[in-house]
Structures are given as C-alpha cells and as structure tokens.
Image (cartoon, rainbow, N blue to C red; front, side, top):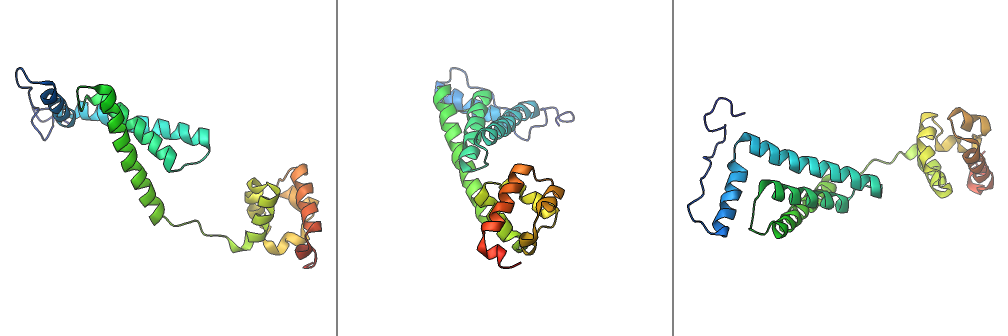
Length: 193
C-alpha cells in the first residue's frame, strides 16, 4: 500500500498547515492528517483502535464472565480514547477530546451491539434434553449438560439413569449422587418408570 504512488498511496492529498494558524485550525489540520496521512499513519491508527478494542473486550469478558453491551461499550470507549490520543484528532485539549471520542465510539458500538442482538437468532432449544437441562439447573450442575448430550441421556432416559450410566459420561461422584437423589425424589420421573 503506497509503494507505487508517489504520495504514499493516499487517495487524499496530505494538507499542509497554514502559517500562523490558530489552535482550532490546527485541530482541523490534525484531523485531516489522521484521515489522509498516508498508509502508515492510517495503519497505525487502525491498529491502535482495533487492538485496544479487542484487548479491552477480552479483559471485560474475562472479568465479568459475559459478553454484553456494557463490555462492548467499555471496549469501544477505550479504543476511541486511544485512537483520539494516537491520531491527534480533535480539539487542543487532548483529555477532553479523548473522552468525547471514547463516548462517541461507545454510543455507536452500543447501538450496533443492540441491533446485532435484535437480528440474531436465539439458540434453538433441544426438546429432547429440556427436563434434564432443568434438573441440572435446579441442582446447579448445568455445566454437565454437554455430558448428557454426549451420552445421549435424553429426557426419556432420565428415569433409567443409574450410577454406571452417569460414570460412563464422566460425571464425578458428587454430582452423580445429587442427580440420582433428585431423580428418586421427583415423582414425575419415578412414576414414568
């Protein structure tokens, strides 16, 4: 990018600052340079923006354990603020500009996140495992749902479950005892055997 063109490959000419310009004019000049400063400047700004967004997003997801609009907006705020600082865009006050750019990025990202959620399809419920899923949630053992699915332990097989069947799907002894006790105490499951 930019090796064949004499102006660095930018589709826009790089503007020069007017002599004796006031701070607001210089801020506009810096904005133009950030957008049309050649491929290396654009690549640096894009790398800072995307790297900050991805890093903050991962940290937020790790800390909070969920990917939601708040984490997405926090990542966008951080990437917008860093983009503003690195690119030198905006007003002469870099702190205020970083905050306003971060807020703008966060608002846009939050809006896009909400639109994306609106149009995304919810995961389809597997009707063959609904009673088993509910039982595991009641017991606080929902992380063993994948074991049930791997072992094809459907709702029809719940009344037939025994210790060896649960051991075969690699469920540890403590959770096995809780599951078997729940099945024995549940009148709906015991009458269907």
